[in-house]
Structures are given as C-alpha cells and as structure tokens.
Length: 359
Length: 72
Ligand code: SF4
Image (tube, rainbow over all chains, first blue to last red; front, side, top):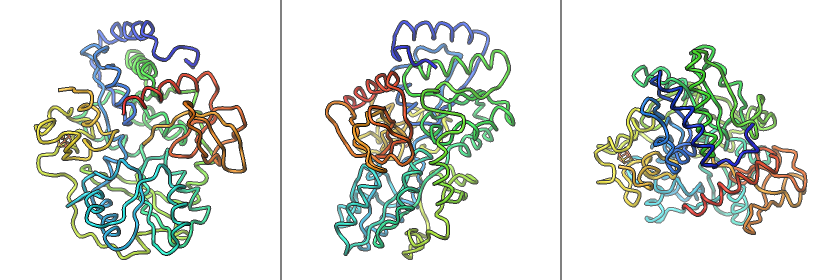
C-alpha cells in the first residue's frame, strides 16, 4: 500500500512520528512484535527514540535460533559425536546446548557443517553416499515449506531431518496469557505471513480484542504499523490490518501451506526457557518417518538445561525485560563470548542491542 | 532467519530459477512455491522463493538488503 513511497524518507518518518505523538498523548501503550528482523529494523534505525514515552515496543519470541530448546541442540550434538554429519544454518553453531554447543562438538571431532539452504545439504549428501547426514531444520513458517519440499522430493537414504520448526501464532497467544506483560497490540511478522496469510491472526482481534497489524521490515513499515495500531487503540476498535500488502495476501502462499500439511502435523513444542506451547511445533507425518532422525537414531537426552546461571533470555524473549536489565549483559555476556542464545543469534534481542551499543 | 530478500528471475527451468540478487550475485533458487516468470522479482528465503513481488517494491527492498550486507 505504501509501495510508491521511499521507505526511508526521513521527512515521511518525521510526519508519521508526529502523528504518532499526537495520537499517543492520550494513551499509554505497549506493542509487541515477534520477529528478529523487526527488532533489527527498530534498533538499527533508532525507531524507539522517535516514539513518545507513552509508546513502548517490546520484542516477543521471534528469533528461531533463540527459541530452540537446549534439548534439540543436545540431540544434534549427540549425533555429531556418533558419526553422523550434522548440517544446519550458521547462526546455530554457537548456540549453547545443555553442556556445549555444536561448534564445541565440531572442535572435539564431530562433523558439523553449515549451509545456506537445505538443498545444499542434500547436494552434499549425494556426493558422500557412505556417510549419514542429518539436517537440523529450524525456523518458523517462513522456513518450514523448504523442509516440506525436500521431503517430498525424496532425499537420499542417508539423509534425515531433526525437524525443529516452530509456529508463531501460538506463541503470540501464549504472550496474551502472561497478564503482567499488558500487551496493547501486535506487530505481526511479514515473512511468516507471506506463507500463512492473515487468517491465523484473526483470533487476536476477535477473541482477545487485540489490535494486530502485519508489517514489513523497512523503518517506515514499522512506524506505519505502530501508527495503525495506535489508531485502533484510539478508536477503541481492534482489527486485523495488513501494512505489508506488497508481500502478504489474505490467503498467504497456498502452495506452501498445502505442502506443509502434506508432510507435517502440528504438535506441542518446547521453547527455550519458556516451556511447552501447545500446537506450536511441526512433526513429520508417519508416512515420512524414515526421514525423521529422532526415529531413525536412538537419541536419548535425559535432562537438558535451557539457561546458564544468570542468563535471563527467557524474560528477554517474551519482552518482559530489555537486555540491559540482565546484569550479565555486556559484562560476562557479549557477542564475542555469549552466555545465552539471545546473544548468539543475529536475530536475538541481546545481540542486536549489543551490536548497536545500547546500554 | 526470517529475512527474505528480493531477486530478479533470469532463467526458469522447472522448479529451479537462476536469480540475480544484485551486485552480480547470481544463484539458483527453488521456485516451486511461486509462479516465477523471467524478468519478475521474487522474494527469496534460505534458497526458496516464497512470493513474486513487483519491481517497485523490489528496488526498495534491495536497498535494505544492501545496507544489511554492509552491516554484518
Ligand atoms: S545478556 Fe546474555 S546472559 Fe543476559 S539475557 Fe541476554 S543472552 Fe542471556
């Protein structure tokens, strides 16, 4: 809808923030986004400084690497140390499992490799037919279709998946159950929505009276989303709106949804430090069990530890605290020597704030 | 992770397209989820096009990606 505007036009940004200021003078609100890329845009462009004190924007659990529980890293490490090659996205290597990270497993002789896409992992496998490969498939609805495509393409026999995908709307619903957060509106994630469309968010205005705006990732996308949410609050009328029409339609990507339905069913999922969220994860259907590494290999992880002592990632991830409220932030925990997943991933709130030197 | 970036479709062969991300970065991506035609822009996430976009929007988003690239 704003496609002819320059997305970073500072005059336009000023105009929107002026309107935001006017509207917000009678309100006191807290909006929540659930996407690491939104946090990056907001922090990188200093959007919080353009907002009046009466408008707070918090970051929910929108970093797929951060929300992956330690037990699922432990599974991958177990395999890597038992003659299986683990292939995954680069952001995951340094994320702490219960005792160590995949990078440490690699240093002690485990075969851990990084790829840009699952397709690259399969290509690797085709060249090395004598080894077993497992792809640690993480990511939200944006990423899950690629796993579905490759499963339907029938990967080689020596290839299987640790499916660790998570779903965003159930996590948003969980946040609304945490009363003390007092969320007044959602900025819903643009690229997740490119896949799932708008319908899964309808529940928020309808059942929770919660204003919800799907937004893109340019600074003005986010400012306009905030403006739209404020207008809803001002008029006291919660709606579902789409600020990112250039990439999100009501129905989303039907083909992607259909492939995901073919391959996965929805199950309860554990989120790091947050615990179980019902209907928030994907599991391979029985028909594809031969590609399920959890079934193929006998992996038994007894206990796992999501948070190192002192790390408050679980509170950062639900937006209850901001990174500087953790005493380890920029002391014992830095991007060079991270203590928690939120400081490892380029989409983690602690890491984004640290990189922008916010104290 | 959920970052998705625009690229111009140069060639399409069944489910794979050669796309141009700008700055001479040309890669093969999977286009099974979209109806990609030569000359159009698609938005790509981790090697898979997830939607076709129009040129105007693509240019603007390309700029974003360029800046992100400079960042890290
Ligand atoms: S600053 Fe480090 S220790 Fe503190 S919450 Fe963030 S990741 Fe955890």
